[in-house]
Length: 414
Ligand code: ASP
Image 1 (cartoon, rainbow, N blue to C red):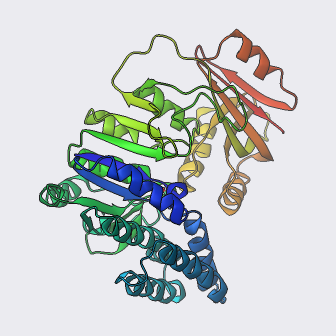
Image 2: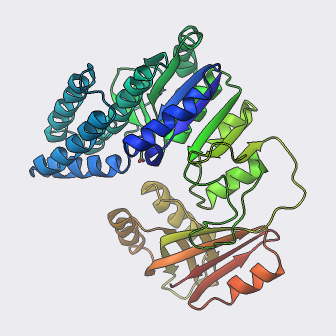
Image 3: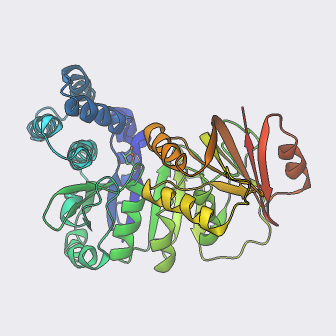
């Protein structure tokens, strides 16, 4: 069996969903488990509803926009006379109810935000059925078992594997349509796997069912050496070793979710990244291979914050002080993107997430003189050559640079 994953852009409207139908038809003889993200920007809209609901504010307008968006798609796909509108209505009612509930914000977030994938998967499943593809909609929450780390559920692999075995019988005569991004605790409470986590769901199902491959269908022709919107000369990689792909995601390449590679590499399942507008393009194959020389790979990460902790008593930065900094990072669940130290200060760069980072800075302020800059861009050049090395080191607004034998990172105020 194979796993296909379609992201939000590939189901963003009725035409996109029809295109998914065309792709799935081409694989009519394959056993397929199809994972889908929420349509377009629905997850962001649902996040807004949770914030409003939890602040006792009215979200009628926002919910109305979500309903119109989905219902219009249903109408354009000719599905108004099926059971689908009633099924969607139940989801709208449930999410409105949850958004207003009193309780733990993150737990409620998961109950509400997960519904984006429930809506899109119901629509896709009914649509595929309507064009003659035998389909079964399944609820991923019955299969992906996680702990109760709300918004970042940790997978219980043992339990998930056990539950997934039931799907092999279904797959022998039907295509399965299910949701990315969501799971549930053993007690049945909905959890999410972290933003953009649908790729990870594909890897989880694939690994538990020993799939032949996973294909992520995207709006780009494959994994590229840079974002073509920034660097038009960017090229597509034909193939990449797992390790290389994993490192790219670590540095912020958003083409694949960072947690996706590990389960696939462990189970030796190839990951294909293909273009949904042009499925005949070869795309990129990530698998166990050796690639002699790769072109420089350039990753831009915006909205970075550089934090410098300076010792205040004329001593030098010591292991003890670095320990304090890392404890604070762990406490606030913040990951460092690049770090550097001098005799009297320790500097590091992190994604700027307003309240979280301000709380971290506040805590560090109890021990150090803390300085910070926001609105920075971190550029990572992996496998740099002489030309790219010189080009990126001479960019204006350079605040920090660091290089190893294969990777150059520059932090810029641009
Ligand atoms: N819908 C979720 C998000 O936007 C998950 C995903 O698309 O992968 O983060």
